[in-house]
Image 1 (cartoon, rainbow, N blue to C red):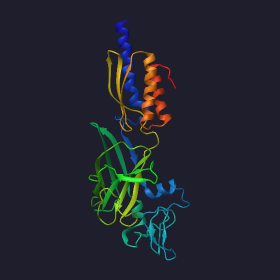
Image 2 (image 1 turned 135 degrees about the vertical axis):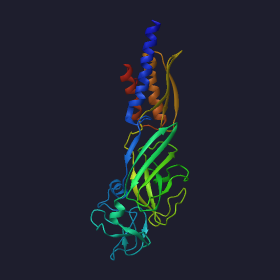
Image 3 (image 1 turned 45 degrees about the vertical axis):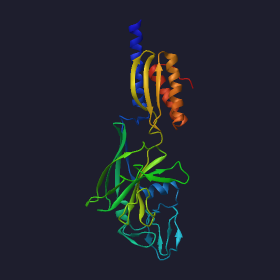
Image 4 (image 1 turned 180 degrees about the vertical axis):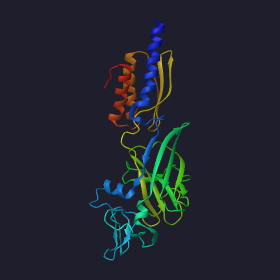
Length: 300
């Protein structure tokens, strides 16, 4: 009987590890991979602009009057935001004060990049690759906080010390930055171009004047459901599972000695998820996956 119980507990232990390795697909063992898109296209879609435009840079138009653009950037007479699907790609770009940026719309929109975010040795690390940037130009990575009103921005490293870089002579760049937390759908990774050739620490700079949003990458919703098992073993009370949910990193030690205990663990996982800021659907998914793997009925 004792041997049978130990085998059952070992099975539950393995199930616990599998649970956190499979729910949502975004765990420590599964890097988050994203492609950057043009900020102009992202902004236009998010704000439902009637015509796709870039609110961060400007082209000359003698009929344009001084105004405040769709992202709150004031520009002088003779300038307007470019319509990215209609204006000539050879149109030269300017900042909001009519200072030439030194490149055309095609060059600006041709930049691209990708990123991978992993957990390495207890740290969250972002590795990004870019091409098509302005050679030898200054850039910074910031984090959008879409859950703030208005949307706020912080350096991607949390300090403004390691989030800036200079593009290579061929317009490429490769960066590796330790993050304070794992991004969610409420956040995005933002590439800011500094047209004044300077970085601005904790701030992006003067938007539309010497700082311009160029690329953005936003995780899909529910990419971070679940978490990771730090420890899973048979103990005196049953299967001892030490689990860490990634959002705000709460940690729980859960003992499951029977199906009754397993059902309790389902509720516990979901409760931890809700407390950590996960949606009800995301938290409930933990319970359902645990139930599927152990055969226990979820207590919802």
